[in-house]
Amino acid sequence: MTRSTIELPVTADDYRIARYAAAAIALSVAEAALPTPLPGIKPGLANIIVLVVLARYGWRDAAWVSLLRVVAGSLVIGQFLAPGFFLALSGAVCSLAVLALAQHLPPRFFGPVSASVLAAFAHIGGQILLARVWLVPHDGVFYLLPLFATAALAFGAINGLVAARLLAIPVSIAEAAPAAMKGAA
Image 1 (cartoon, helix red, strand yellow):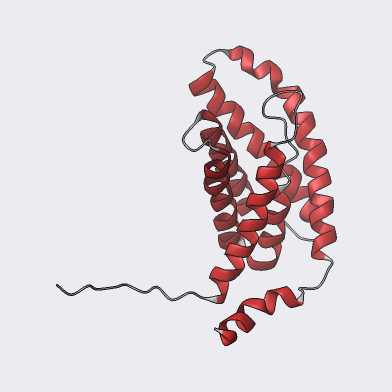
Image 2 (spheres, rainbow, N blue to C red):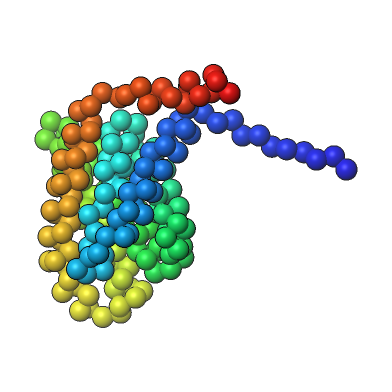
């Protein structure tokens, strides 16, 4: 019996996405350990990474990083296919949809901070809608909206400021590391 193998070529883009996704996953796992006053109110630190990837490499790479973060992060913390996973996934998908639209806004007036705030509102909106439809079939869930919107505004602005600061740093030597590693292998 002969055994056949399939080899997929690994590109520099794959290394870059994996590196950024690993950073986003690490931030998600660290954030899961933080105590929160209410379930669902978290700083969204991994979204800083997604914003940096969006600004530097485009929506496609940002979507990969965001979705890999949700899936792998839920696997690491043991919540894959639990309600928290679906809430995170719905928030990420809504956030990515808004970021796709926000790319077409004039960059003179809309930067990382406004993109982050818009994405934070979309994220919490997607989560509240899913919670209403699936987990809490009562309109009372919408009473939490002002609290969640305030958190989205605050954390979205802070994360956007951090992302803007990171984007001001030139792409480092670490970006060239996969090419150097490939040459050494």
